[in-house]
Amino acid sequence: MTLRDAEQLTGVDKDTLSKIERGRRHPHDVTLAKIAQGYDVPVEELLEEPVAPLGEASFAPSEEREARMRALRESQAYKDAIRSGFADRNIAGLYHFAEKVEFDLARDADDLKAISLLEAALISYLRSYEKYERHSLKARCTPAQLATLEDVEERLLKARDAVHAAFRACIDRERQAAEGDPAKMGEIDAFLASIGSKVGS
Image 1 (cartoon, rainbow, N blue to C red):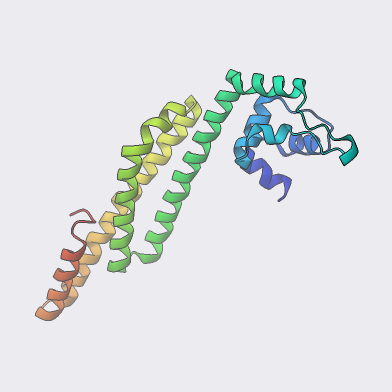
Image 2 (cartoon, rainbow, N blue to C red):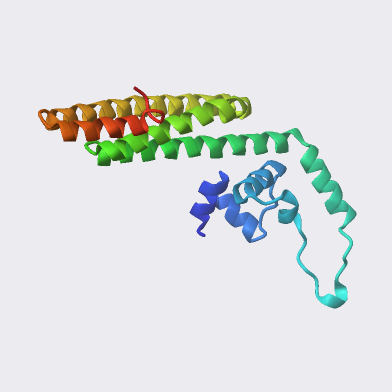
């Protein structure tokens, strides 16, 4: 992993990460919290002391290190950094999902089955997000994150409307193509009935 990758993962400047890595800088508590959140490891793991040779090993953690870890976990800066990191990751997840929907829509706009699956997945995702995630995510956002979240939510809603419009256009094209062919029209109706509970009308 490059320092640039680590910077994107943690939100900590790559120059700062480089200095910490080479022992030229001691990280602040907030920086430690961001690094731990980015790598999904406990802060304690980042504070572990190097392993001493077997004959010199001290198996009891130092009182100074224990006191520092306790103070860090109890600090408001640490709690805020963890909350902020959680919000960043979840907003990024929403953003990437919106991008994927837009990509799939551009690729499959003329494919009724693909668009119906995309719409069903999008509706399910939005319902789950609204029911289980949105409230807690908004509560963890800083004002800047909240503005970004609102932009991403608006993008998702626009994508939902665009997918539904593409779905309706596909149905209209299929029906026009099947006009005068009762068997083909029956296939379309059967397909729509099979997905009726999964997509919007």
